[in-house]
Length: 274
Image (cartoon, rainbow, N blue to C red):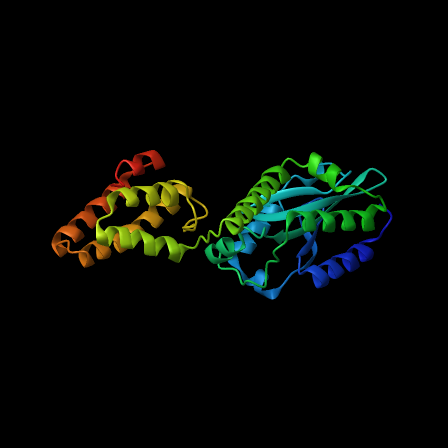
């Protein structure tokens, strides 16, 4: 590394201003020397907690030969270890960013402003990391090297590429998946007593987690329970509209919600879905 701390600060400022990516310089003691980020992020308690965890990351044990990618709570970061004459000087941390496939869910669950966390495809994020690495070390790297060297990138890449394929398939076959779409079909089947068709949509949308969303990013089981409790409430009212006695409907609704809360796995939950 041949650049000074002032150069690093200048690089950090430019990255933030051009990409809205936060940039933080963390010294060998884990202290933040400088940080470029939005005021909205600085005031967000979730971001503060995230940064507290990131300052304790063992950066000095990671390679200095390429950018290192890490993910926390579906937020993506990369860092570059700073070494001069074989002396570790800290790490330049860039992020968070979000993948296009989970931007809406994460910003909603973590109460982030849509403008405060940039959405970047993994190819863009890797390209930025190569650019920053080149500015620091004047060494050209390839995307292939970075992807092969980073285990964390593999599930992100796989997830984004699979999502792209699914969207392409949907467009070719005129399929549009939205929460409202499934909700309308589900409630119509309940209201009109189409039990077999109801089984089909439940198998796809609940077991397959189609497009029903995530209501608790920290706990997958809690998210499924929340989704199903919401579904039970909607189904209860649709059944009443279809002619079911109100007292019977609300009694069944209470029964299934109580049973749902007692379950400890998805398999246990599925025993009570019909």
